[in-house]
Length: 68
Image (cartoon, rainbow, N blue to C red; front, side, top):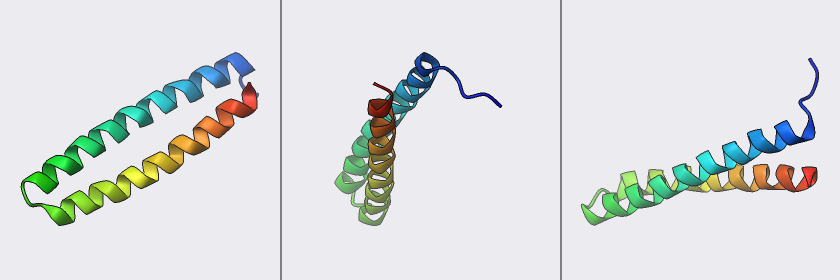
């Protein structure tokens, strides 16, 4: 299978980054809400997922920069 052209690759990666940013925002708000109502363990789980999402964001941002 052929690799998509650079513009298509950039578009796909940019879309992935936007989705991850949205997920990070949701996880942040959700974690704060959980903490507020005393669900500390669930808030910690959200924080762990947020950390994974942020690593993925950094990875895709790096790949996008390579295409620049």
